[in-house]
Amino acid sequence: MLTEKQLKQIKDELDNCQKPLFLFDDDPDGLSSFLVLYRYKKEGKGIIVKSEPKISIKFADKVKEYNPDKVFVLDVPVIDQEFVDSINIPVIWIDHHSPWPIENVKYFNPRVNGNDNIPCSMICYKAVKQDLWIAMIGIVGDWYLEYKNEFNKEYNDLLGNINKPEEALFKTRLGDLIRIISFNLKGKTQDVMKSIKILTRIKDPYEILEQKTAQGKFIYKRFENINKKYEPLLKKAVSMLKKKDKLLLFTYKEVISFTKELSNELLFNFPDKIILICREKSGEMKCSLRSSDILLPPIVENALKGVSGYGGGHEHACGSCVKIEDFRQYVKSIKEQIK
Image (cartoon, rainbow, N blue to C red; front, top):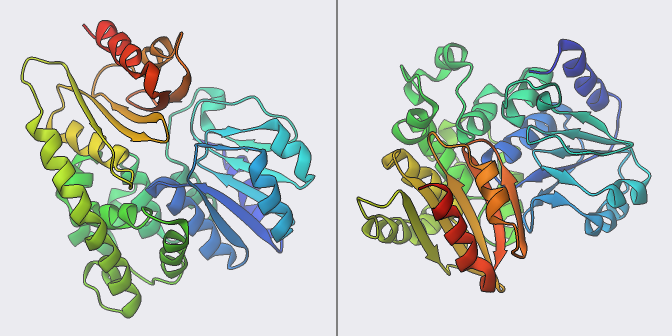
């Protein structure tokens, strides 16, 4: 974990700005990180990072258009130095992926000193100490379980006596809430940002789970519409499972990306398998790789040798993007490595 001094520095950076811009990853951890900080600060603007997992030079125009006094980057694994150098605005980067070399940035990443890979939303919560229910969406959504006792004091019916993050994710009402929030991050950016704007104003999880308010009903309805596209894909992926194969490979062409959700749910149901879910888009295969017990980053790194693509991630959860013409070679390398 970050030190108390570092956590205070994050809070001080928030307290000492008037017009922050938040750039955050398009998953529950990234969104929760933004919501926790934004709801504390009650100022600023959020922009979701959807196209690729990095802050490239193309975001410089968005920064200059809003003209913030600080930029907070949340749960995004890569920032291009060119972006930092071009905006001439203080950048505060809070992350938990593999450390990335960068200059002229205030960088808060517990892995820099070899500490635990804790979710970004947990770091943000520890810095400002409010909205635990929102932080838990990101924490458990990133396969981590913390603050159970504290959370259960107010929301015992959402979690209860669960001790494993994967069970919290797939066997509890908190897990249902995480699925609802995750699916609200799907679709056109303008629709996603409308959902996010509503989430900045939701007072408690029951507004959504029990559709108690107009805002909660809106979030739940968007989830239902997206879920209608997800369930058939999940069923099809399960039908392709072969008992003897270590690797469960499933490819699809759906407009909406479900690679993270499919890979996570399939890993929970088939923990002895390595899960590789790949979506074809614009001449590329965008992939999610999951495993319960095998370290994945070295496998992905080796599989990318000699192919056009990029990738990386956590010990048991990685993402990658490979050109279609190199996809067969990429998969072949993974299969050879896991024999």
